[in-house]
Structures are given as C-alpha cells and as structure tokens.
Amino acid sequence: MNKDEIKIMKMEEVRAVVQEKIKMMQDLFAMDTDAMIQIARHYNWNEEKMSVDWFEHKSRLEHQLGITFDKSLDKKLSELKLSKP
Image 1 (cartoon, helix red, strand yellow):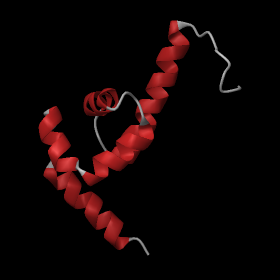
Image 2 (image 1 turned 180 degrees about the vertical axis):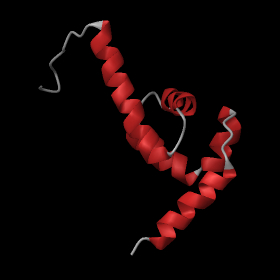
Image 3 (image 1 turned 45 degrees about the horizontal axis):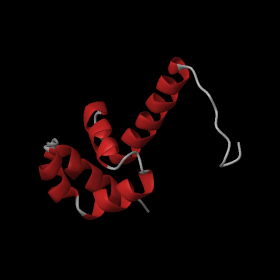
Image 4 (image 1 turned 90 degrees about the horizontal axis):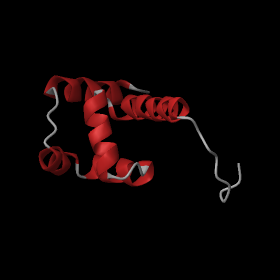
C-alpha cells in the first residue's frame, strides 16, 4: 500500500492489528499487556521513539508512567544478554 493510500478496516481488523503490534512490542520490551499499551499510548504508538527513549530513560519513565516491574525479570534479561556469544 502506498503511503498516501487509505485503507478502510472493520473494527475487528483494527483490533487484530493492534493486538499483533502489542504482542510484538511485548516481546521486545518484556512487559505485560497493560504496561505495553500505556507506554505505546505515551509515545502515540511511535515505535522508533519509544524504543530509543525507553531504553535510555527507563527508570524515569517507569516512575513518570507509574509502571512497576519485577526486578528479578530485569536481572534475568541482563544475564541472558551477557551470556550471548
């Protein structure tokens, strides 16, 4: 589809696209659905800006958005990153 083209979608199609996008972002950010939606809305669904800002300012944004995480998950993710060849 051309950038200037408009596609009319049924509500079910929109929901499916949004759910797919949330799932993809959840895998990248390792977050639950509610937190992921909150962050995506904060960035107006701009994935590029969200990725850059989130990983650079995670602690500040967690506090600003009122998101709490299981710190053991952060430790596990760090260990996984360190163990990759």
